[in-house]
Image 1 (cartoon, one colour):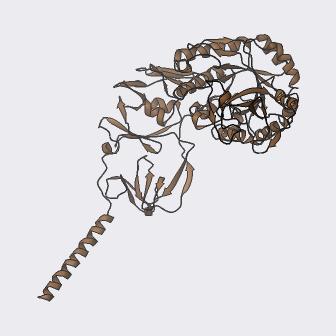
Image 2 (image 1 turned 45 degrees about the horizontal axis):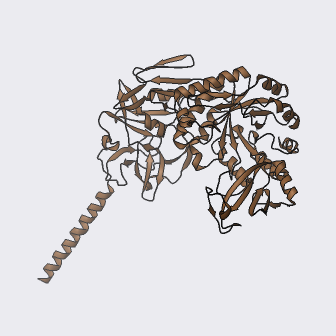
Length: 576
């Protein structure tokens, strides 16, 4: 009886082992179930699946009259914001013209060539705007691969980004999930190349030459990896630049009430032939409809030209109470402003326009960069140099889109100052050497050096800390146990280079060199108030000029003429 029981147990164990072995072998056999692409793209039968670069989109396209259409929002989010919708029409800025296309239109013209689609360029379906893929590929640098059988399209636009290639070492299958029992997307052969998106120990996420993204067992990939860039046939519209062969040495002349012609002669004499570009602040927007005030003078331009100076007149939105969002989000207002600027530029005979729009809000960013594109097309048509003033790069100003500026504009100017600004809650340098260096380096990540100009300050700030008990009732009180006063209000006064040095001399104070910021520093107490100042003078200016020279960028600018000391232009001339 016992032997019989043992035999039963042995047979049962053997059967369990056999079943386990069979199940193990089963787990190693990939599923042959073909993926349902409606599930893969989460789409209906009428929709077209979309893969853009390395991502399967959650929103699908549509097909009408044989033409594939992409949702506008996905085009803007994943391809380019150059496809700008103003609520009534699509605007697309080419190098020398702006295409304006309404819903239902089927014809557009680039240069002298007119193109007509077999269906509309734009569709409005269920209050959503769709753009024809044929139009997108004709104006922007993309390629597309259409899979008619599975009804999807792969679009590629990331020509700068790297792709990692791997080679398949045996016939394998790509699966929907990290499990070979999940539905199969495609079979791939030994020697096929795949793009590796994410590599892990057991499974790797890969993209096939068809665009399909799925999982393969990592062990079926050869160990070698190649980092490269995608190549393909795609349209390229160059935005020709009017950059100058010589380095730019520019300065702004602030003119709030007149052209500034009365001081031009003394400026020319003082700058000793070093200055080659002057930017008078002549144009100021005055309302949300695109109206602006002009303080320009033909006589000023004539005299500047006679002395070898180019004139890049500034247009600004500073010191005026207008709604910049309302101005820039209106196609009619942008057009009015641009047409007015071009007309005034031609009348005055200036060489360029310097755009200085500040305090733009994040929600206005997409409209601001569209204004830049449209202005660049108009300027290029009239051979006017377009330079654009920018804050030092930071995450809080990314929406100014310096990368796009660097493509469509001639120069991107870094306002390399106001590291600590009027109204701020901390006293400090206006432009420390590390602040200047980082500002240039971060800009060069997005803009080619031949287009980058760094502006330096001809001013500094005298900071005043007033004890809380002596501060005005409306003052913001700062608490800092490491400061002279634990509780105080902070104010500042802008001072020119010469006047700040004179101030310390009159008070008998000798400043001390601060190696970390690259400036002389001084402090003193007077009338129950504590003062700090970081000087802008010859040594600190040399520190900045060395940084600018080392970066080999397009040039230098300065804010503003009249605040500099006498030696400044001779010193700048040693570097430029």
